[in-house]
Image 1 (cartoon, one colour):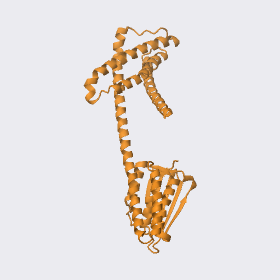
Image 2 (cartoon, rainbow, N blue to C red):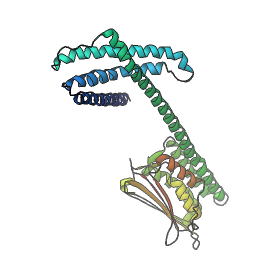
Image 3 (cartoon, helix red, strand yellow):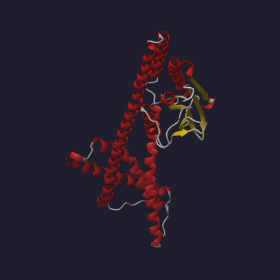
Image 4 (cartoon, rainbow, N blue to C red):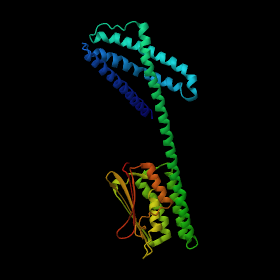
Length: 354
């Protein structure tokens, strides 16, 4: 954590330094070309020292102090009138320090670059003159700081709201499949207590598994398959030999991260709607592989498929679609397709990462 904070500060410092350097180089180009346009012979080191070494880099040196001062005494909203005198004082202090640093740097560097002794002119006039320029720079700095902070707060708030909505969607899945599983157990309890007892045992294991991963939005596919197997054990007790689920998972995607509980609602949907109208059996094929940089999950049944233009979406499927949208934006696919030989195939593709 400490290393990450240092790295973040270093990156921020480099960005600030690069910004002031770019501004200084622009002013250097303007000043030097102005000399050339006026047919004045001058060493390029003269405007370079004035605009980059002293003007821009000394402003960059003072920027962290301006940043801290602006955040400590925010001059926005109801605080504006009260804090304005403080910022006027801060502005004058910034200008005086910046002008003094410019003077000292130029005094030190002019002889080094063969430009002779530097003369800053009459200092009682120089300080007010530079202050007029520094007022604009100070106002731009403070305005930029407040604008950046406002955008960051808005982005953080939006991120927290999105995380809260995503967490709410994830939590909705657990009572949804629990309700369905209890209904399944209730259906066989009075017919076969042994089967009902086995289903309750597997449900306990399933709940334990989901609680273990309760904080995770994504889990390795291998763990998602294990959770799915626990759910299928409950369903097999109900359907007995009329339920067949084949799993074909490519080894290269077993550690790929996928949304937690993404397969269970898809398989549940296939079991519910994919009963073969002739044999009354349920056959589901679950495949997982890697395709074009994506982890692709496909759940296919052999039921009647879906009516033309109508996607069967219960709570689980609708929830899954919304979670995928919030987790990956446009970087995912959720497709429903009637198969040529009967049945429905649902394909989910998310960015491959481990």
